[in-house]
Amino acid sequence: MEGGRDRNDSRHAVRNWSVASLCSSLSVFPLGMAAALLDFMGAWKYLPGPTAVTDIFFVICVLPPVAGVICGRVALKKIAARPELAGNFKRIAMAGKLIGYILAIPWVLYVALLLIVDIFEIGIHFH
Figure 1 (cartoon, rainbow, N blue to C red):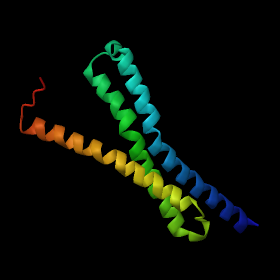
Figure 2 (tube, one colour; figure 1 turned 180 degrees about the vertical axis):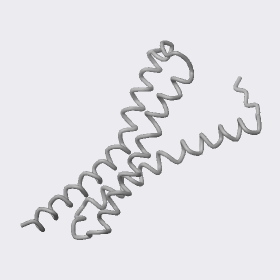
Figure 3 (spheres, one colour; figure 1 turned 90 degrees about the vertical axis):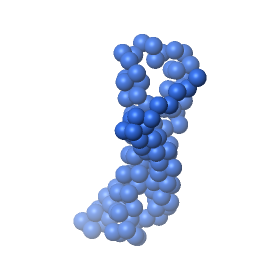
């Protein structure tokens, strides 16, 4: 009886990690739209400064895809340890991980560009 319960719990864990991967990766879209709506409404003027806006965009646009990649990785490790539990959850975990990478890589490149501009004191002016 204990073996059946352990297998069932493991299957639920694989399902939970797989779905968490996909959902956290996809959560960027509604959060980003909410941020765009706040920007359109002029709500950013009530924040204490540009640092607060940067922090909000970091939380909205960078953290969910990274969480999706991490959850997808955990799910795929659990599936690799016990392949009989995979079912369709392997595809869900792969989708969440892939979407997370696709959404996180541009932000990493953007931050790298900002660091390069700051380190080498390159002046970029938008007129």
